[in-house]
Length: 58
Image 1 (cartoon, rainbow, N blue to C red):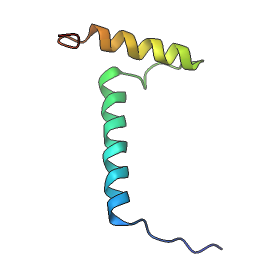
Image 2: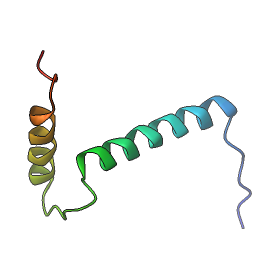
Image 3: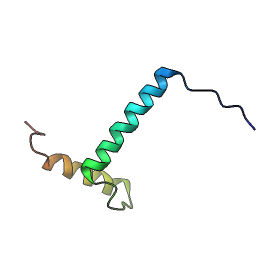
């Protein structure tokens, strides 16, 4: 069995911030609802959600 080394504190905080940001995006854009067969369908869905969001292009 390999011995796991603990993450340095700075990397752990950065990882937590990134994971929190991704989970907020998934919840706010409802990306967990649909199943996307291709990267392009996921990308299109995200682009539509961003374009429909008020104040995005201001």
